[in-house]
Length: 335
Ligand code: SAH
Image (cartoon, rainbow, N blue to C red; front, side, top):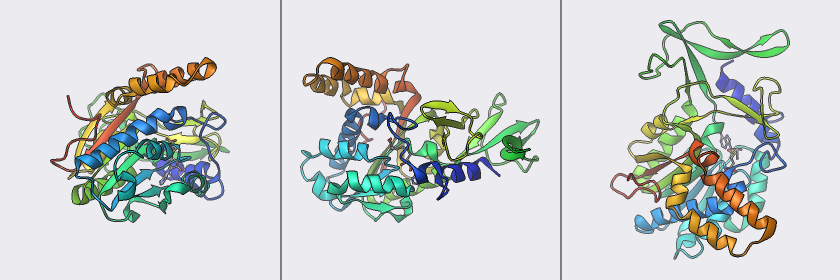
């Protein structure tokens, strides 16, 4: 099977899928994400989205959507931080795009005060100005990978060797549409579902207004094999225990940004730079004033983890979408 079929089964199989059957997030789980590290992440990105809403004339009937909300932590922090933006809470309806029944239950409980609606995909979102946040969502979408073989390309596929799942190569096929790949590059990954989602979000933002802030690890273009497995906060073999490890791949932002036309795309800008522009140092200081001892040490460690180039500050990148002619989402303006 293709890597995409394998990833989809490992993550979403109703009985055995990694996301379908558990809450993998947090210190006790399999991996930890930025909103679980510090409340500052959701607060600052939430204020950036609310500013984009103000910049576009504070439209009524807007949709505030999160893709892959995990435990709902980012949305809860965003909501609290935007309480004093005049009429923002009254003007938006919250919609959550979530595939996992287990995580939907957790989100419904955690975010009950927001009365969210749930959607299986972005195409099911209600019409209206669309303000989207997505953290570590696109990296979970199924990828295909192609390996150069002389003048042709062969797809990397999963097969059986005895009782073991192994990576193999399908016979050479017609060259997939990979664009211009520099000759030094031997493996290219593609993510058709990610491009389809970016296209739908971009189409809606161009038509109804709105903005998107997309955070993930990755780079402008896919230039190597990046499929990885993480279980219990450790790197694992992606083929050793299907459904027991998180599978993800680096996000290629270029194809997403191109798919989102006719909306204008900005970035990618390193996460540490964006959070810095949004005022994380000031926010960290004001939170620190109420803390001491171990809590204060943890708070500064979380600040460093989100922003330091040696931690998540550079590996994670932020891309934004806005209608043509509207200002870019705050933090993403080209300078
Ligand atoms: N944004 C959260 C969670 C990241 S984990 C955080 O930062 O903590 C990835 C999230 O995307 C999970 O909620 C997972 O269930 C969801 N997800 C993965 N694939 C999906 C898909 N195809 N459709 C909808 N949600 C999906």
